[in-house]
Length: 286
Image (cartoon, rainbow, N blue to C red; front, side):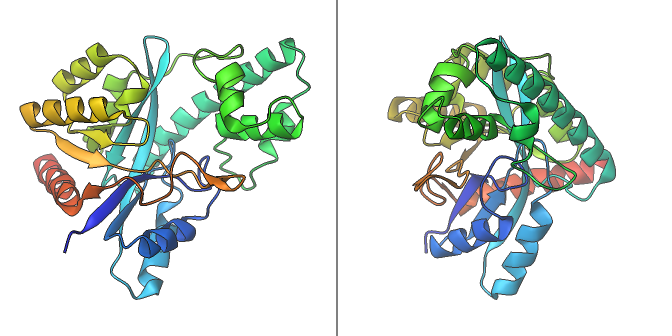
């Protein structure tokens, strides 16, 4: 049996639209053996996903993960962490600091949109999430822009305003991807570069491999076939784990964003290799 895993999914804990239990349900429907919960700079959705998996009575593994935000050369670089200590208070405190920087970015971005004559407010955007941990991202801002009639879609919002070439794009100082890798590894997790095809900077990818990445996300909806082949070759050359994931964020209208959960996956051997590295790291830290 060819067991598969979707190693990149988001929930309401960050900028997804689904509860964690829904990600587990969709993973089961897709026939997956495992699903990773990798919300932006938070591990808040993992416990609910674990509980949901336990209640199904089916064999579905929830992998504790996180997608750490960093900046290099003026653009966002995301590093996935797997088998992270999601119940560790010290690790959670570090992630909280990253979310504070995201909040600062949101304030600057909305101020820039207002300068462009768009009647958007921080309060209106933040009302889109409830609870104390308001982990707001650019997709939430895009949703507000759609409701205001400024743009017709999430894609248009990013292309015209919010993406790295957009009119309102801002990027306050954040940790570097090297620091993100170190944060994950020092916590006992395994560090994998997310969607390298989005960065259009293979020199940086090579630098991060040399710095100490454990893996690279080869199978992702934003990696072209040529890029997948190149990243697979680099992973083989450097002994990196090759992962894959849909980057599922739920639905924007009737369409899944980025892609449907289970549509981009890795073999279960990747899960076993990630687990092995995490165990070795934990033993070395004792």
